[in-house]
Image 1 (tube, rainbow, N blue to C red):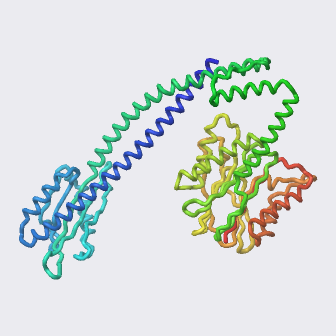
Image 2 (image 1 turned 90 degrees about the vertical axis):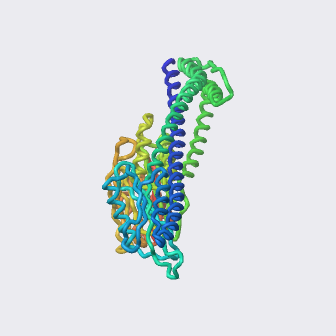
Length: 510
């Protein structure tokens, strides 16, 4: 009992600390990112204004030979934090009229990069109409150093032809941005430690409040387990734990009579029926027809609820994501693992913009493998179809091969790709196969309940039977194809109870 209490306390504390850490770190990372972006935006805006001002002064100074005014402006600009280099260059011989260098940045590699940047700038044509400040960012330097090079061409302010007089070059670094970001990171770290300590204390108090009624339930379970079915667990609250205590008492009452056991079995059967309806609702049973392709799926559990699962969704970038999975085992335990797979799959598609077949399987594999109480594994195939490029990428996690039907020639072949099932080892690595599709081509995904369906003579429907139907029904739309193939399997296995879940998904390119 003491071990149970200690275990729950530490689990609650750990989960709360993880949540607090995640929230604080997320806020911190976002704050640092937004601060850096804002500092960069402010710096670019201010230096752009200063470069334009220096350009206006330089235009007049070049005409009257007043280098002192340009130098005074550069002197003022050099006081701005992050200033690296500034100069005014003559258009006549591309030489520097005045310059101001920050001695802290007199590095050969910096001067070489700035000279290359200036050489690139001189190659363009300069016109007074539409003249504006241009920015080039240079980042190929040691450490986190980044340079912002501003150019502003200036022209004769009075001549009719507005001839080109020269260029202002101003260079700033991201030193001030990095410094302020570092200071913010330090403050956030201190805040995180403070909140972490408070969360730990609060979690300890909360855990003890939760453990007390759980301890009472554990004691009641021990007494009932010893045979005292008249024992009632005291209901200590009206929350979820109180509801759990009341449910526990109802359970002990139900054990007294076989009739009540029978009624409970009927309730369980009804729950399984509802679970089957819910499970079937998790699979998109309607055909999806976008004009560029059609996709249709079918699934049937062998025993009420099962472990087969399929899904297809259109991603924000227009690609089609298709997943088919087969959990080891049958019935409720397999269906619960299937729900876990669907949850991870759907959550991943909602949270991440970059979707790759191998990363999907890797994520599902790590989640399943990390759940020590799950003693099951699953096979699956995940594919992405790009309707614009008509390319198919897929990754196989121990699932059987998929069928690829080529409309040009009416050939149906198996495309194999090795890969271990998910949930066995969290270090599994998965590879990606790519296929170029053409109008009329089809991809057929299936679980082994399709090909291993058997008749009274113990003969299997087999891969050859599925291949023949794909070729025979290739001219139909996918909804008719799926319906006809399922009808053929039912006719083949008529009168024979099947022992494996059946799932079939067909994607047809138009």
